[in-house]
View 1 (cartoon, rainbow, N blue to C red):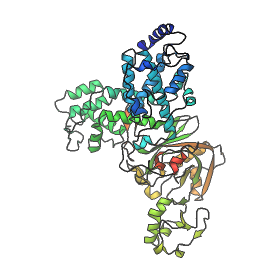
View 2 (view 1 turned 180 degrees about the horizontal axis):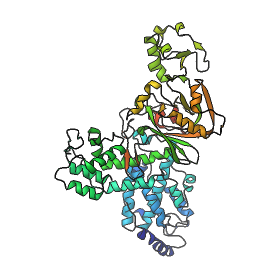
View 3 (view 1 turned 90 degrees about the vertical axis):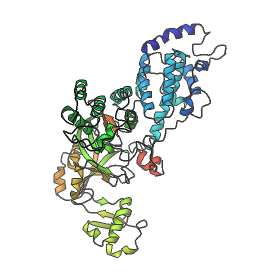
View 4 (view 1 turned 90 degrees about the horizontal axis):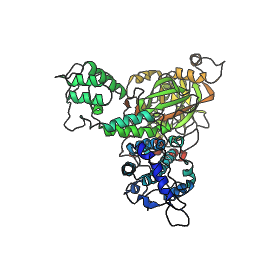
Amino acid sequence: MKFSRKKISTFIGSVMAVSALLTGTSAFAANNVARPNLDWHVLDGVKVNSTASLCPQSSVKVCNDNIIDALYADNNFMPYWLNPALVSAIMPQLQALADSNTLPGMKQRIQELKKLETRRDERGFDLLLTDTYLVYVDYVHQLMQDPRPLYNSQPVKLTSLSLTMAQQYFPLTVQKINSLIPSSQFVPTMGVINHLLSLPANPLDSSDVHFGKVINIGEPIPYGDKVATVLWNLGYLTQPQYQQIVAQTKITNSGVLNQAIKAFEENYGLKADGIIGPDVVSQLTRPYSSLVRLAALNLQRERFAQLEGDGPQIIVNIPDYKMTLYDNQEPVFESKIIDGMPKRPTNLFQSYINTVVINPYWYVPETIKVQNTIPSAKANPNFLANNRMDVINSWSDRSVVPPSSIDWATVNPKTFAHEFRQDPGPENALGRVAFLMPDSFSVYMHDESQSEYPLFKRRHRDLSSGCMRVQQPRKMATFILSYQNMPNLPSVDDMINTNNHREIGLNTHVNLDVAYLTAWVTPNGQLAMRPDIYGYDNPRAKPIQNQFISIPNYRTHQRMTLALNGQSS
């Protein structure tokens, strides 16, 4: 959707000419009225059908008629979008919103704007673009209050903007418009989106395409020319490489094409072995429109995983099974993670690490207590002793209750009054190091028990009961403690080797954002994809609970009600 800067710039002269013919008003003010009002007849020449979807409660052609009237009055009824730089700043953001499919009617609204621009209807274009800008402001503010539509496939529902809120984004400047950009990667992501939109349909996106078998290295590739076309379209082959491959009488899984397949597998979170199996085929055959939607949807999700300030910050990406520690917005440390299984997903939230625990106790969360610990204790009299676990009276009274004093045969897991605590040690569920943060879900980042270290070798690591297990917790602890100005603190290894429980409160908190991003653009400009392990990208038969997707911010105490009520979205 490109809007001609030349045509927009000629609007200046035409508006001034029309304004001179109106008595004391402007091109946007109605004639023959004692008090100037906006002339809504400028929209009579175009059908604005998008409003019925964007804001069904509106009885006029736009969503924000009263606010628009007041804003143009503030501007002496002169147009707002004379400067082509303003149009260039807002249109890509509106396109990204439309492509995300999270606001019904936005694609249609952009088509209406394009029609007005094509017809050189500058006044109608200005008026409708102002309303669309206000719709976008409302959309962003709604997401800040309730981000669930980005994960539950429900549309964002707009509410009536107040004039005070709208005036914060006027008078128009590029800086104010850009304050609404969802991600620091907005420009490269829109470059990829526009490229995908320019392509013909995926040649492998057909019910007639059936590979039938795994294609090993060196073997002929069915539909080899189409596979090469997809890899060329997605940036994994240069044009000379592509032309050389499709000129071959028999295309095999070898050479440059095999290297492109490996790079594709790497970017899509698949095993980068160059073998074309079912997982590779399912990604190669994706419609480009699906890639566009997911890239745009994840742009909006990045609003909740932004790098902020100059201090240390950790971003965990659940589908990527990875955490990254940033310092001054530059990555300084990465580690694989294990996150929650689909039936016990890791919560998405924003918080900060305020305590590092060496040789931690593990206080068993309620879900694990009910579903695992008590059934195991009932079935095996030695379970608690074998796992170095104590029964404690309560969270407030941590005195030990002898297991022999409990009639396990009659215990109801859902009404059991006591709690469980596991002693420090190499087989502690939290391992040797834990990182605590304010949250309401009993979620931590922590080490792994020694016997389960091999789990980090798996590609799909949605295996925990909700916590985030870190492959390199000692290095992570060393980095975090280096920010604390504690020169007399022993090394992490030395503290672990004492086998003593120790809690270290942090002077410098480390911001933590737990995010869910299944698509993003790599530094070399290619689209990276990850499996949608929790089903947040597409509609689900079973609704997702608020507590997992409302992204409470424990740094600012926002959205807590949505996070804690646990109701279905």
